[in-house]
Amino acid sequence: MPIPKISSIKAGAYALGKYIDQPALVHKLYDVMPGVLTGLAAGYGTYDTFKAPKGERKNRAVKNFSVLGFTVASALLATRGLSIKGKTLFEGIIELPEKDADGLKEVLGKNISDSAKKLVKKVENDEILSLKQVKSLINEFKAVDEKLVSKVIPDPESEAPFADLLKLSWLGLIPVLGGIAGGVAGDKLTHENWKKKFPDKVKEGTYQYLNNIALCNVGAGLGALVMNAFKVKSKAARFCAMMAGVLGVGLLAGNAIANFVAKNAINPLFDKTERKGHKSFRDMFKNLNSERHPEVLDVSLHLDDVASVGFVAGLKWIGPILPMLYSVSAYRAGIGYRNGKNTNQVA
Image 1 (cartoon, rainbow, N blue to C red):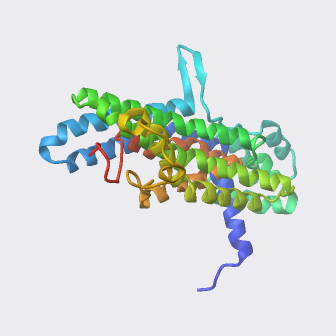
Image 2: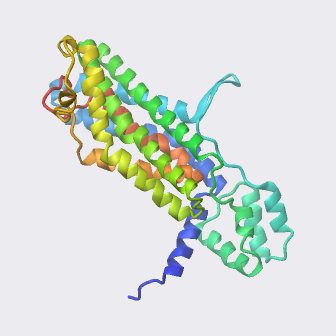
């Protein structure tokens, strides 16, 4: 089997990128996300409930319903905002793209084939083109004007990347706080000692937010700053620089920083024995992984950083799926997940 040429691979990737970034398709993703996210949460909650011993299933079901319910609700609220009776109480963090009405009219005024005009009119009517149809438009516009493609399906762009990183940090924080609130509610509903379990939820929430969300955004921001300093405009180079920042700050340093905060800032708030005396600088770094060490799922959660960088780069289709990516961190915060020796949370 012959190896595809690099040019054909790039052309295929370009067509796929245009296909999934259609404004109509992004709006469709946005519309179906509540159902998808709720369905996935219900599926996992059911699985986790029946995985528990029979005598514990009722309480596990209540806890899962509470944590996952708060997680899904907070993730969707952060993304979409909240309106009651037509009055917007607060705006959602994610903005949806709009079609370029003037650009579409300009394309329809060009000397293009009838079949191409039909496809452009479909876009004008908020219909979604198939990948084959997108490829057809790209191929035809090569002979007329390649820039016409961007009039039909706008190119990804971000006018304020640092503002977008701040948005992502807020978007990640809100579900984590929602998960913790759901965990506390679940403990109360099952008559558990919520105060005893609350510190683990705060520590896991801190771990998830710093390690898997905020510090990765800081790393991406540093990568963007370096590219700005050297006036690099290449999107590929900027993407690679931001991912390098994510890996350097988030993946490599995130675990240590999150555990350092948990040990030296959060533990003393809840444990009187931790408040006595001043620790030496060496003790502050000692046994950082005693309560929480990184594992495979933590590393895999950094896949959402690729999506985050893509969002900052202006890929609009990523916005609607971000709540789904951040919900895993929120759930783990809600159950107070700990994988070390010193933990009160079993679920």
